[in-house]
Image 1: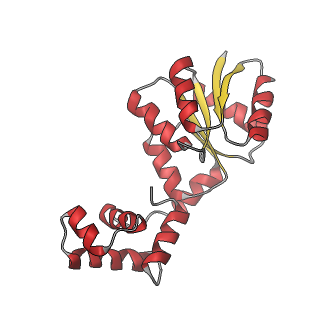
Image 2: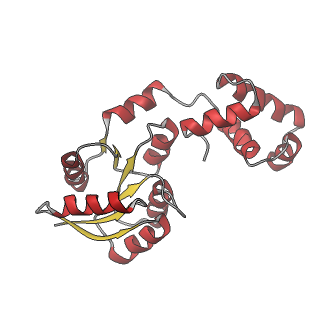
Amino acid sequence: MIRIILGEDQRLLRGALATLLSLEDDIEVIAQEENGEAALALIKQHQPDIAVLDIEMPLMTGLDVAEAIKESRLPCQVIILTTFARPGYFQRAMAAGVAGYLLKDSPSDELSDAIRRVYAGKRVVSPELSLAVWDNPCPLTAREREVLQLAAQGLTMQDIGSRLYLSHGTVRNYMSEAIGKLGASTRIEAIRTARDKGWLD
């Protein structure tokens, strides 16, 4: 029997998923929660085989939970459910060791099949999501992302320079490069574009 924990903040969807998965002879939903923090606590408590997590939940996102599972070296595998084909989210999921990355509107039999394949040690990714990543690689360097991330938090160029031990001119150059690579006209527009793509944490 494959033991599953569900993390999904939409009650109706969570209930529907639990009901559908429970109809499978080899899958048991042992617990479910509406926020990532509580889902992580359940995972630590029950040690399930697989956690099926919504990518966007209160308190901790599905990606936050996946990263915590990896950091804690818990034996639980993770399948992320998402409505967003955002390259940055996908790349972060792969870095966190996520074994499955599926669209929420996938047929229910695809989810149960994905659970079995992940349980067997395989990785499962919706084709639409992997194509989105290949078609939209992040053009920013790590430093450009860092500068943009700090700007998104409301820091001034001078504050960013102090935080990163860089001169004002160097920070300005990184910001200019980021704006240009994202095809934006302003810093605000660049931040919005990067967030929409999932390239900012």
